[in-house]
Length: 355
Image (cartoon, rainbow, N blue to C red; front, side, top):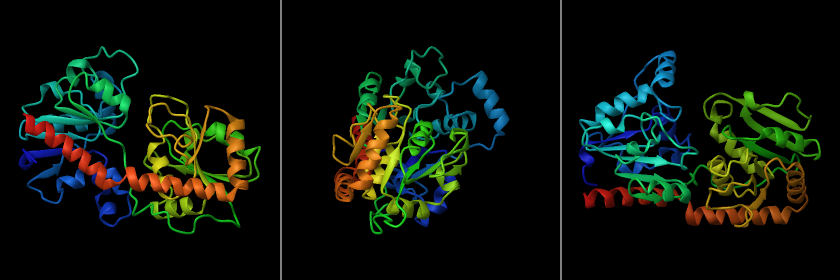
């Protein structure tokens, strides 16, 4: 890749995961393609280290200077400094507030969806003149590609899943103790799912943040609190993988924001594990459980829809298996890490070679 001898990768959340990744205890799709850049070759690609700034200071700076969409001063300042010494910056954590002050570095950033309102703050990462500074955008959804292509070359690149960790192997379910599984913290509507539990006899296991936990839980709801970090702080990924393997189906109740990508990773993990997916409708994703035959899509806050889908899969074992195998077939074809990495590499190389 052109300019790779002086490139930096901005991925503020992966530093503490490197050892887990090396031991295959953390999903490799969360590298966001940086393994294709030969991360082990220190002279080529290095992670930008976060500054160890007290949380209170970061919050103050964010409140006064940056918008809620900025990764914060402990990420913004190190990235700004690196831009004067490196020819390429790859930002996994999205657009940056200070990008217009960068040196000559070519900057690429991941984006998920268009901003939901007009941006008027010049220090907002999504301010138009900030977006025009980028060399390219890697887009997780078609809607994002359509919007961000107005500012810089953009490419829709579907997400991926670690099919070695989530390998879909037996046990395919636990017939002696059947249960449905829900996991995740962003944009979740667990209140509706918990209400659904009152109308079914099967256990529902929910791995979610305590702030989203409804006050009164029916006896068939098993709630596991997460921390502010990913769910592996409450349950490790090997155990989560076994719960995927043993459950009847995976539930992804969402708040119904048609422009959000919430639940995308959860959905792909379930598909990789050959599990049917029951998911609230999401208008921004290019794949649908119901349309593509690997589950059910349910309207926002539709308790009856959840009850019907759960009872259907609980009673029709063959249907559940067929949906699960259909999901695995799709991820093996369209959502491999290798395809994801090659898409990233190809897009960035194309832009650099045109420069």
